Image (cartoon, rainbow, N blue to C red):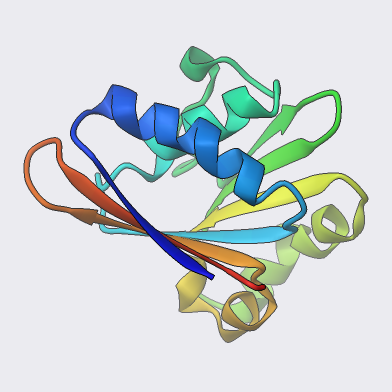
Amino acid sequence: MTLSFQTHSADETIALGREIAQRIRDARIVLLRGDLGAGKTTLTKGIAEAFDAAAQEEVTSPTFTLVHEYRGPERTLYHVDLYRIETERELYTLGLDDMINEDGNILLIEWGEKFERMQRDKDAEIVIERLGESNRRLTLTTRE
C-alpha cells in the first residue's frame, strides 16, 4: 500500500510521524529516504513520541554515532544512519542483525537504499521530498 502526505512545517512533520507510527507498528525495518536536511530525523521525532520511546527533544540525528536507541514500553526504536557506511562488512559490524531479530524492535534506517539487503528486507519505506523551505511530500509504502 502506498500513501502520500504533505507537510508545511517541522511541527506538521512531527505530527505526521505520530500518525505514521500506527501504520508501521508491526514493521521491523523501515527505510527513511530523502536528501540531507529533508526531515528524516524530524519525522523520527514523531514516531518515537508515538511509541513512548522518546520525547521530541531527545531525538537527534545519528549521523556521527550511527545508531540511537529509544526504548518504549512496547517497542524499542533504533534510529540508524548508514550515510558514512560504505561496505557490507562495515554494515555487519553495526550489529543490525541482532537488533532486527529481537522481538519488539523497529529499525528506522536512513540511507538504507545504499545496500541491496536493506532494500530487500524492508517492511516499509518513507520517502521525503523537499517542495520548498518547509514544505515536504512524504510517501509511505508498506507491504500489504
